[in-house]
Image (cartoon, rainbow, N blue to C red):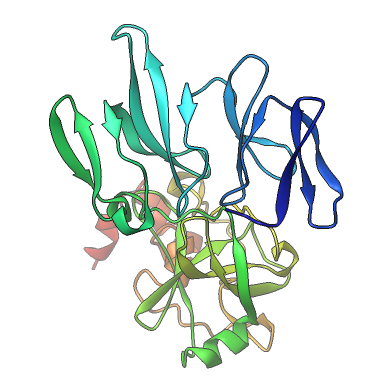
Length: 296
């Protein structure tokens, strides 16, 4: 549980104060649970449940689930939804962004405990299954972020003993990530960054990872992952600017290593080199990226 905020009651309604006794959420809820992973479970006058953040913003909205765990555990919470055709509740598990990690198909899921995340008991009728949340929750979310330390790009490269960082794209999701040596980090940027930094962060699930981000975004609890643009919108008029993932002395370096297949530039250009984009070769293949490698 998050101990930074205190739940209090006034005239039969619940709100929250900070450690200085200042009211941060006015009393307005019929029920309010202590914050966990940055969220508090609340109940309104219609007996509906929701999860709110410390700004009183609904993250998981009222009326979606008939019951929810009072607290998140390592970024996970059990929820129930009533299915009218079957006239019964079904159990599932969500993360702190409301993403469904375990589908709502189970008749019962045992309480989530840290020691049981690898093998959580669940039941379909009388049939018992074991849920491994470490496998199902492997999607990295940028929520509930805690900042451990922050480095300039140059300082990070010195720390990890790498001369260059390479940005790549995940084929299925188009989400960008970067590699340093045999390791990976993640990216949360929108366009050309002004002051890029790499922060070591922990998310609501307790996962610790390096995050390439704007310096001005440091401290934000929730960020959006960066994604590569769809190939079909890339044209031969692409700017001559080099990759914005490589920096030398905090400015653009036009000697980046573009030769690495699916390195930083080709990831950004959907698998094509900058020369192929500007020459029109990429357009001539109408998005057939496999044809490029067979071209003599």
